[in-house]
Image 1 (tube, one colour):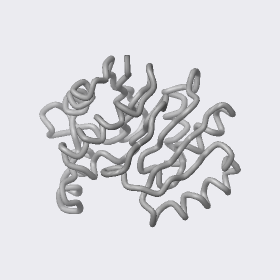
Image 2 (cartoon, one colour):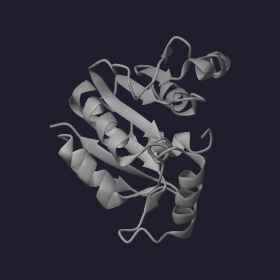
Image 3 (cartoon, one colour):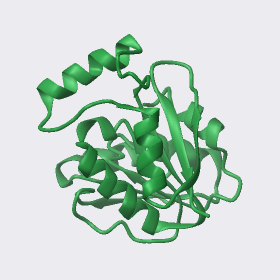
Length: 186
């Protein structure tokens, strides 16, 4: 995540971004990168209680504690808050079922400010779900290693975002195995 975070920041930019919610932000890498890219950005990381003590250490070591706050919680059940310019799900959606992801997307949409963006970074399958190879193999791993996880196609992510009230859904290709799917609140 530490190496990919600057790519995400560069792809999304910081213009007009004041508040970010990093769901399942674990290592803090993406919030740290946004905080370092702009002194005007305030990030909040929501992750499980057993993770956030380690997250706090990473944020403190990065010297961005004034810009990055940490909230213990469970994204499947807790309120996200409101007024965010960006809500990020970095390498998260593959852990959850379609139904769980749809619920997260709907609640994220409600927590976004006007012109806010929901950003998903993950392995993205082709429409036939047979490739690319790394994404298809990872899907098998999720089938075995999680209760309901999988990898999903761009069509699925786009449909979930649109059904949640997001528009202008687009894919941003990044170097490496994962890309971004971004939906906008209008």
